[in-house]
Image (tube, rainbow, N blue to C red; front, side, top):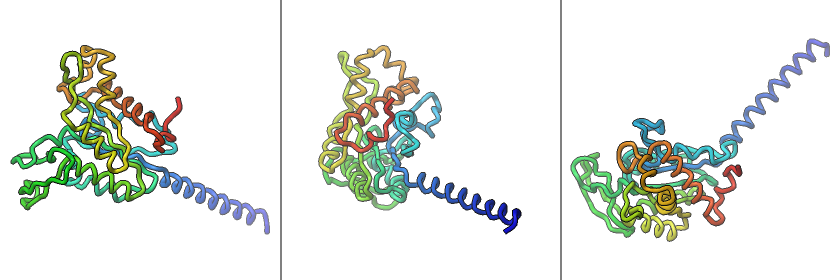
Length: 266
């Protein structure tokens, strides 16, 4: 084999090795576990771009994780409830790619208390965690729809995520900027319901409402009001940062939760 032929062979070999390396890298990237975040506008407002100065905590949680080892996909959508997240097909899209070793962090409630069978949005769910149902005529399809409870929809997320080998983490809804005698007003019974469903179905639970409220009390009501540029529900970037840090605090407090191994140590 002459020099020219040897150089040609080396070139082919180098090309093959490069292709193998690229293919290996792509496969490794595809194998990385994924954190799927689902929720409403307090988790991701608009497209997570801070429109109207509003930010959700899911858009600001990335720096806490080693994204070379785990991916984060924030699927939360403004205006959704447990019910409409399913009706809009968002949950099915996640289920299509969800795999063993992934994580689903869910936070709903703010829109679940809305109208169930009103003539405009129909995004609410029934109160509680029972198997109660109500049949309505859907304004989406103009056909009968069976509406379930808040807890029923949460159970669906948990059970179906676990069926794929994923880990489910339920967060209570974040608090609104409402106070009573120096204490943050808890959001009805949604944290209680979220905790009960998580416990009964083998999911992890973070009382995000309580963690955030404790931080708010520590910094004072006057400071907290600066987190809300328009209403008492949607935070600006500073408020969302505190909420994201509170989610991380909650994750760190979960006993034996495998997600902690992907968090940055710094």
